[in-house]
Every structure is written in C-alpha cells, then in structure tokens.
Image (cartoon, rainbow, N blue to C red; front, top):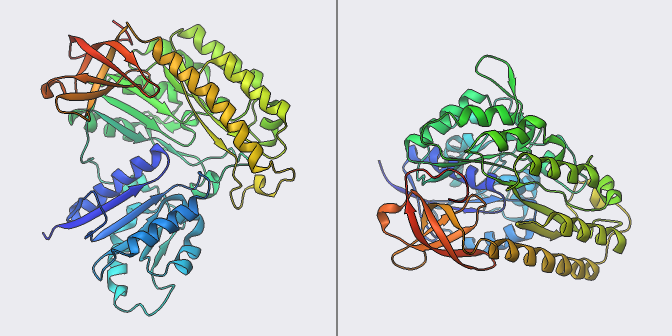
Length: 456
C-alpha cells in the first residue's frame, strides 16, 4: 500500500483531541500516517473549535497559511464545530478547501476523500468541494475502528456527546447536536482494548459527561457513577477521570463514586461560569450559586482531598461590577486548584449575541485580569502545598531534557523527574521538591506498578 502523509491540527477541547485521534485511526487502513507539519502532506485536516473568541477568523488565517503549501496532490479539510457552523461560508470564502465536515460525520471520511479526489480535477470554481455537516441518523461511534493507534499510558474515551442545556452563550447544542450516551458495554470494551495496549489512565469525555445515561449490559439505564464502577473492574486500569461536568448533573451516585472507587481521581472539573445568580439566570445555567457551593461541600464530605477546577466567563451581557465581585467571592470561597477564564464573546446564532447591555471590551479585559490574578495565585498556592509530599505520578511523556520523564499527579499537575526510560508508563512515588505556576519537579523515591491514592 502506498503510504500517504496526514497532518491534523487540533483546536480547543479534549473531545476534539479524541476526535482527531479517531480520524487518524479511520484513515490508517487507507495508508495515511501522521506527520508533524502540513508541508508535503497528502491530507491536511483542521479540526476546529467554535468556543473561543474569533474562532472562525483563526481558522481562515490558518487556511491562508496552508494554502501556500497546497499543491495538486494535497487535500485540505476543515472538520469540527466551525466546519459544522460555517460550512457553506467556508466553501464560499476558501474555495480551495476540498472537504468540510462536522463532528458527527468524520466516520464517513474515507467516502468524502474518495469523492473529493474524483471531483478535484473537475473543479472550476467555488462550491465544488465535499460538504457533509448533516446530523446522521446513525451514531458515528458505531462505525469507528475498534482499535486505537499511537496510544500511551493515558487515553481518552468519548462516552457522551451533544448538549440539551442550551446555555445562552454556547454553540455546542447547535454544532454537536442533542445529548447522546453510548452503551456501557461498548465503552467497557473500548477501555479493555486500551488497557491491553498499556493504558493506565482513562479520561471519559462528553460535553455534559455527567449527564451520561447509557444502556447497561442488562438493558437498564446507567448513570456515570455506575459506569465508573463497571470500568474500575478492569484489571490494570489505575486511574479514571471524567470531563466536562455540569452542576445540574452531579447526582449522589456520582459523588459516592469518588469516595468508594479508588481509581476515580480526587480532581473534578466543574464549570460554574459566574458567581452571580442574576448572571447565571441570564446564562440559562439552571443552577444557583448556593446549589453549586452545596455540591462542593457534599463532595468534600465524601472525600476531603478532592480539588476542583472550573470555567469562568467574564463580561456576559448585563454583568455589573457587583456581579463580577460575586464571582470573585465565589473563587475566594472555593479555592480552585486550576481554572480557565475568558472574556465573553458573542457566538453567532446564540441568544447571548442578541442581548442588550453588552459589556465594553475594556471592562471585560480589566475584570478578566483581576480574576486571573486571583486564580493564578490559587493555583500557585495549591502547587506550593504539594512541596514536601510524596505523590503518585504516572510517567506518561518524555520530558524536555535528556534523561527526563514527565508525569501526572492525580490532580493533573505535570511533574518533571529524572528517570530511566524503563519507568515510562509506570506509576511511581515522587517527592515534590519545587512548585511552579504550571508544573512541579521532584525525585522518585518509590517504584511500584500500582500506587493507590494521591500520596504515599
């Protein structure tokens, strides 16, 4: 088989990272191998995200740069949420793009490539590329290859996709579609294959992952807590995580799973977006500040060492200084280990984009700077508190320097250690010696196949 070069650029969320990996898996039987640069590639895929500010313009900017390297053999594809939302416009503005596809149709990539290759020589103007952004009746998960390629000690599994929440700032319900949960047995079998390949840390993915309500092996419906229990029975699977969660879907069974299942890590990404009830209502979040804080208290009652990360949007339409101060006070009360914060940017087609009282950009920027100063200080404090502890670290990447490996704590902190390559993929005890804003360094003191808990 003739070998072909495949370059994929991934934007945005971990779901996109998973999708990019699965696209590579789909294309491997056609002879495609991943390369690090678009130059000379036979197929270039931009797997896009629609969440961030000016997402579309960033895609067009990258398309313009790649066009400089596009020759007669290269196929250029735009996938993901920008492709879903802006498909016809992409074809109009960038007629040199050969394929545009949404996140629900990438299982049909081989067919799209064949169509694009057949039509390439016949194209005489814009609008002749392959556009596939329909929401299919069948689930894409039913058509993906069983095996993953290029896996390491950590891996992702998509268990839920889409969203029925319709937050007024968010495009996900329009680009990813309605909520869908995969059958539990299909997830278990995918996880089992990954563990056989040496994976020890699995993150379950979904736009609203804790809204999972998949069919169980006996035909009943399971929530995420029950699914975690089922997956934890896999011998060799040491760590389980999940993201991204919604406060409305943090049920008792899931909270208890953090207490009772050792493989479930004591780290939870639970986006709140704002600390103001008035803004939360305008966002259509359907939870209050009090409800959010009650969830966290209950989680800490079940497991006191749980740490949290969150998402924040600053400058949502109508946000006053008092609303913003409510957000700051919530952050001060929770004390986050990590967080992601952004200025509100209107997304075309969402209710928020049509709201009055849009906050001026300079006010958004000033508030974001204040919030990030507080969040960064909290992250540094959390990392500083780890100095002197011996933590269980899964070594899953090569470090920047020779003789160095990089691993993850249960709290997803990156830890650099001097280590033999034979320890790659193992969970080791590391005494933390230094803490930085985004990483830790330490020395290996214990080597075991499996270390339970977050400290020794």
